[in-house]
Image (cartoon, rainbow, N blue to C red):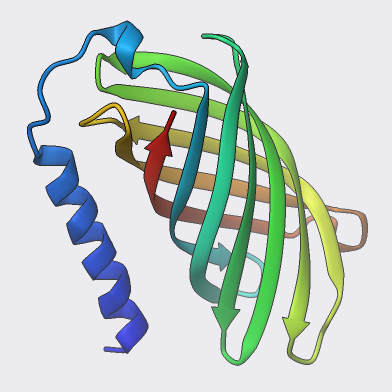
Length: 172
């Protein structure tokens, strides 16, 4: 197995340990965040050409309308067979509280990507549909699992991708 695979498993393990650590009980109001930063690992599969890629992701999320709207802006750097791709997205999400320490966000938004290395250095534009399962064992630190579906528009029309990321969250 490659080193990258072990790095991803290590991060997943750390997230699981963090989620089971007892930080004390806080009320629902104390756990709400108006701003959060996230960093983690991501994988993506292109359904058309059956290629897979993995890499890192970084995002910021803020809440302009409490319990109604969250906006996430993120970037992901993916690597696959000697090619690198940089993707940015803006998601508009609706939050649903599952418990005092967990939340499900359902989102839709735009994505833009550009191949940085490889034979094809084209840019593409598309739509993203995402779920985000957030777990907050403490007020300031949590983790999330984010499955996502992408559909290409413009010059990448019809291209479909599925992917997921696991991230450590820092909330304020």
